[in-house]
Image (cartoon, rainbow, N blue to C red):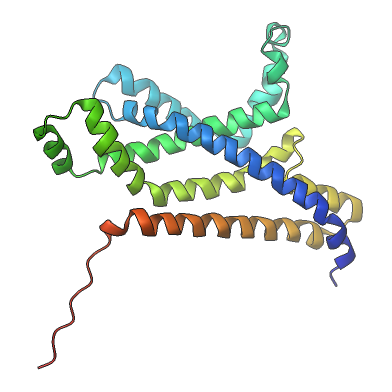
Length: 237
């Protein structure tokens, strides 16, 4: 039987965990979105000196586990004495800053590749038409390439946002009291795994449903022109 008194008593703690989870998710995604657009432009550049470093960055970040990256920053940097004595240590010793930095760098790498793929997938006719109108490269990117790529990338970016929501669960390993940390505390206090982690699962399911629903609405609005036209019904004889 489920102990509903434990569930009810844990609700305020879970509310606080939700705030931490959503705050970390929001600031990480905002940073990643801001950085990934110029990096995606560099990623598709024919100039190797420009696209090469971006490829290396995305390859390294996507090729290593997020948990390892978080431990490397939060625990690994502390072993350098010169860093602990520098002004940067004021922020680097903060669990919040380290979690934001790692999550932002991680989502930037994935989002850069998503946007770069969307840029490559744009119809070449759009680019030729823009050049025939005398647009500069900056105008082409601002008016044609980037708006079109961002719209086409919505389904893949929606998946990335959901994955980042689930990834925030590892923030509890560096002392952030998010949803997963609250569930662990409830379990340690009451030794009731179903009540503790069941509540966490429900929270993540609800948050995921809200995010997926939001992206479905965006896709319905901005990708409507990509849907195949309905087949006309033949008129009755």
